[in-house]
Amino acid sequence: MPERMTDDSVFSTDVPSEIEPVRKSIRVKASPEKAFRIFTQEMDTWWPRTYHIGSSPMKRVVVEGKSGGNIYTEQEDGTVCPWASVRTWEPPNLFVMVWQVSPEWQYEPNVERCSEVEVRFTPVDDGTTLVELEHRGIQKHAGACVRMREQVNAESGWGSLLTMFAEKAGGLA
Image 1: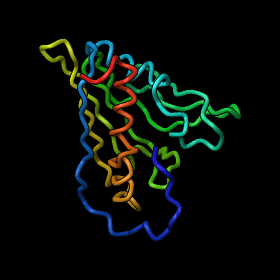
Image 2: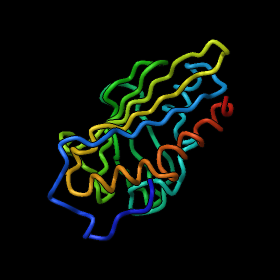
Image 3: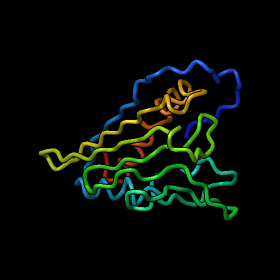
Image 4: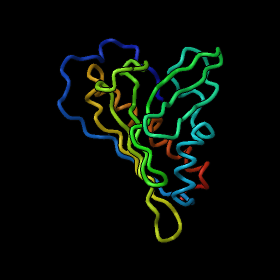
């Protein structure tokens, strides 16, 4: 994702009880089936190689297509770097993943300390698909959760990722 945080001054013990979710949407020239498939099973075709939390360059993204499946990157040094897990897998309408990335941009194995990203795929009458993304529960990350929200909501965050996805899915509608 965006640049890793290295400034300890951004970490706080004052964690808001609720942080506004990040919401983004986009319409793509694709059916819900195609959009769902490209967003999930073909994530590797559009996800930027620089957006990873591994210790070496990213080779590919893997999404295990089932509830309880893992989402991880394979790194060039042969390591596997988990960063999410599939909470809900309901093709072609709904995909929810547990965002297991800490405010320090490291893997967080404790899902109770993780936010989630929901992506809905809704058909539109003109044959396009409305893709709605909501990254919620960010306050569960504690520490620098406000900064994390700013980063995933930034121009280089979910908005640009959805644009890259749209290009692969057939373009913006």
